[in-house]
Structure formats: C-alpha cells, structure tokens
Image (cartoon, rainbow, N blue to C red; front, side, top):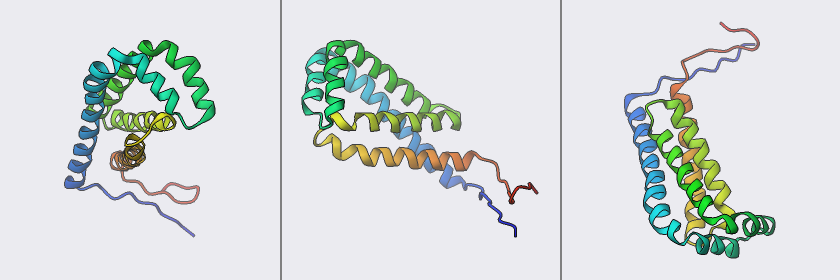
Length: 155
C-alpha cells in the first residue's frame, strides 16, 4: 500500500501574504526593541523588572526574576533589545529560512515572557505566539520543494 504526501506549490498571492505577514511581525519586533524598550523600558529598567517580578504568577519564575533579572535590569534590558532586533531582522531578511528562525525565536521569546505579563499584554501574547507558529509552518511548507514520499522508498 502506497501513501503519498505531496506539497502543493504555493500560489503567488499566498506567498505575498506570507511576505507581508513576516514583514509586519519583523517591523513589530524592531519597533518594540528600538521604540519601546530603548526609550521607555531602558531608562527605568530596574522599576520595570521589579514590576515583572511582583506581577509574576509562577512562583519559581518569580524567584528567578527576583534573583537574576532585577539586580541586572539594565544588562537584561539591553540583551532584550538586542534579541528583539535580531528576531526582527531575521523576519525581515530575504531568506525564508531566516524568517522561519525568526518566527520560532519570536514564539519562544513570547512564551518565555508569559509568566511575568499582566493585562493587557497577557491577552495579546497567546495570539501572537499562534500567528508566529502558523507563519513558521506556512513558510516552511512554501519553501520546501514539491516531493512525493512512499513508505520506505522514494519514487
């Protein structure tokens, strides 16, 4: 019995949609890094990180944020700015592979932030994670060559 898996070629309009989606997310990450975190978070980094620790709803995460992040608030914020810049640049890159890496890194970043977020950010993050994972999957499908596989044998 043969089971064949085929990936259909992606149409031009769908590819344009994926490009627009990844560019929007890449722009979002750069705006968050250079707009919000550089000019809003960095000047009051210790207070912001202390607020994250106070609002944290996962006890072990709270201890880690209190012990590691709050005392090193400025370097952590600079690292966050750098990380968001790299993720945004990857999403905006010409290579679909770099965009895929950016989507996964962005989803991981957002997932890691979930325990320290409160309203309204906690409501925005899960859909943002889902969108990034969906774009990752869609980009992966669109960039893979059309292939046919059978059980144990290639045709």
